Length: 457
Image 1 (tube, rainbow, N blue to C red):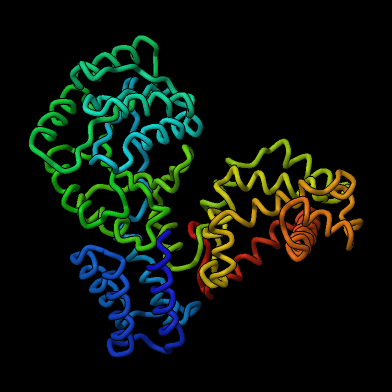
Image 2 (image 1 turned 60 degrees about the vertical axis):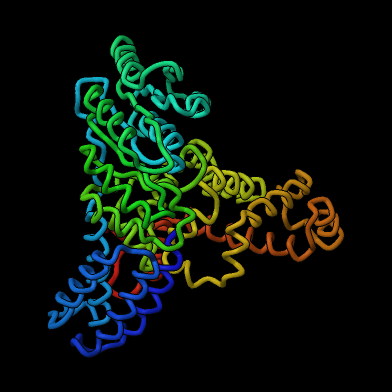
């Protein structure tokens, strides 16, 4: 996510980190590079101009804190301006209404509205403990109604049936009436998309909005079509009182221009990011965390939240007790950790939230990116006997050859897994010792640039 912008800005800002004092002359070249990086990332030109001018105004003649060098102070200014461009703070959904609170989704065809309806429904059900009803008012695409029904079953929220012979306004009215009778907390209305903005579409969606009177009207936009998105966003913003934006397909957006531009274009906050195809791949948007990620400083708070949600706490407690009591950490435990990691979106999803990950060798990142590493490690462990998994020291020459053959890998792959397992084993021992977790967090803090802290700390 945002790899190109992150790499370019990280390289650019390194050039100023050794400066003794911030002056107009010595930041001129860096600001030019920052400007080029933002333009290459497809950030809207007015946003680039405002961003560069604000950084320059704040940096020249800046009183530098004793705890920071001038270079570090400059990076803090850039981080602060990135946050400001994206909205400064997370703005949650406002569901403080007499139930059912109605959320309406708007956007062009192909932006990811229907999948976003399902993802949002799941998020509200699992994290906010809300009962949710979803309904499709897209009478022009029968497949959209069926798609939403399938997704609703998958995410375990209620689906209200609709038909292409009905009018969108009638569908929405019936769904809301049903939700009132069943005391449902939230109704999410999926509206029709088009391949382009047209007058008939806008008239229809305005009439639908007036009828359902939603507490939230969310504009769903594809992060990969940022320039088209700018024009679309303007048209929707003029037609509807939008309350926020869902930026989809962010996991495929190496540039990051949409995240930095959309707030300026619509004047509305980004509320969620769609970060993958899975139904739980929807993240609340935190400008401070995204700014930190763009500057290569990671997003440890989001990582911690994901771990808290994704980890089976009972299993984690059993493992902790086992390690503490001297039972050790074996390959069965290691396999379970790999499976839990898969449940949290895979290793790359976790790695990219750690500070300094952009400095890892490209070949290592590529291996993690395609999921090869986790799948291969699981296959190797599955090819071992139960006795070998419990006693890894047994795995020597002939056993390694058998395991490699059984898992379709090479002996060096088996050796690599055993080495990674040993490192994990050592880490588990350290964490089980008194004050182990604090020491580990201090070690991670050392990965950040001097004077910087994890966001929110």
